[in-house]
Length: 290
Image (tube, rainbow, N blue to C red; front, side):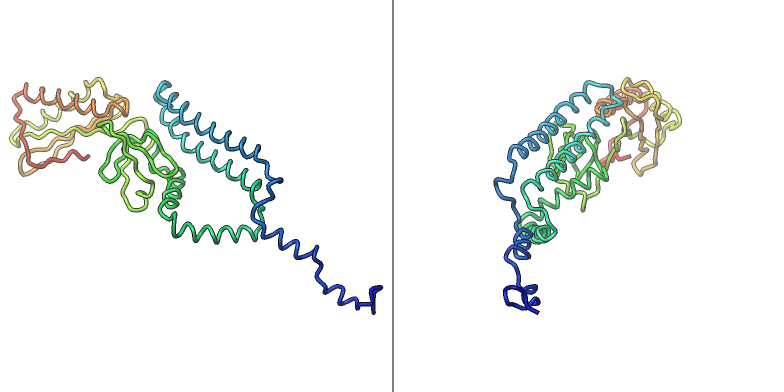
């Protein structure tokens, strides 16, 4: 059977059309849309909106946290990294279809190329970014938490995409990459709560009235102006070869008062022990861990 052109019908069907499958393949592998199809104004508005949201969140929420009620402080600080992650995700997902021709074939091409580039050039940085996302989800630390990471203890003042910032008791700012969560133990003293336990150490000779000393040190903690009265006050003691180790465990009213609280209990505790004629001793190595 022949058509009007004189060729068999099967030959016409098998003949590839330049406007058919070839064009579809070209469209499929085209990664970037034509410049005239890209709305740069829309991209600019999306980027500007995301930047404004992140900037205002970083400025306003910590300001409100410091000036507002203390019970809302940690909630407001915890919102900052979550809002930043959502804003960045929204902006990226909005811009990608504008710039790129999103198809399954292009996804495979981009994923393959990106995996090679990431593997050789940006392995550590991307690992930190992934750890940052996991930190936002699992929340081993939050803004406002007091944590110890690799020997550095301080308040988490900021959680970025790559790292977090600690402010120590010496008012030093320490930047810690999120990758520490892969191989370091992270000690969180309050874990999102408004208070934490403080431990004050006293060392006295063994031959003493320990029941009286225990009651005395408890009274010292109970009369501190920094004490959170709703939380328990404990005085623990243990026998050591050099004497008796007392640990006064109590909670300050505000997280930021922990060092002032420990100092207050230490000063007044020493005065009380001296007033009652109780002998304190000095040991070569002492631990204040709880």
